[in-house]
Amino acid sequence: MTVWQALVLGLVQGLAEFLPISSSAHLALVPWLMGWQDPGLAFDVALHLGTLVALAWYFRQEWGALTMAGLRVLRRRRVEDEAERRAMFVLLATIPAGIAGLALGDLAEHTLRHPVSIAIALIVLGTLLWWADRSIRSARPLKAMTWRDAGLVGLAQACALIPGVSRSGSTITAARALGFDRSSAATFSFLLSFPITLAAVVHKAPEAMVGGVTAPLVVGVLAAGVSSGVAIAVLLRYVSKRSYGVFAAYRWVAGVLVLVLWWMRR
Image (tube, rainbow, N blue to C red; front, side, top):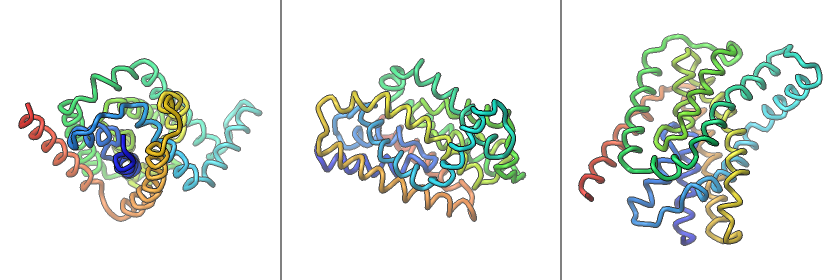
């Protein structure tokens, strides 16, 4: 892999990770479209290190409060306030994705990275996102979340193991379907991404660095970090005033184009 290829993939990863358009799909499709060798899931996960740093910095106050709340729960063995409930909600919603990753990681790394399966996932989740965002009229704030809500969003996050589904797309769609307002749906999605991304980086990063810390790897991680910070800020500002419809439309167009290109290349 060249430095240029790593730069492109890093920028793609960072921008697509927090927009509901599937970073895993784009990281699999870009090499396929460009004729590059697929770097594989281990390199994709290594790029998430940059994403993780950007996420930790952007929500540093929130994560500080949640960490302290979690420690209080461990010490007292009970949940008493909103911060403590939110910390437990994040923990609960992370469990399904962790189990799915351990059980189906090999399937996601190989079989599910086929362009056709990615295209179908892009279109299907785009349709669900459009329906949830357009049809649900309630606007619940994040503080109204219940244990049931957190569990359902967590199950949705587990589906993101399939390239093309999108972790942020699945969790935002689930949160919108449960009636949360657009900004709350995005915020909870971002909070959920930290523990699962951290676990994936710890699990897969050693595999990505078998050949050592190379220049392409460093460039890719830095590019992912910068573009992730931009994506978080842009999405939160955008959905405070507008719908998720543009992302659903993008997914439809991207999915159809991939199917057409795959058919032409057969």
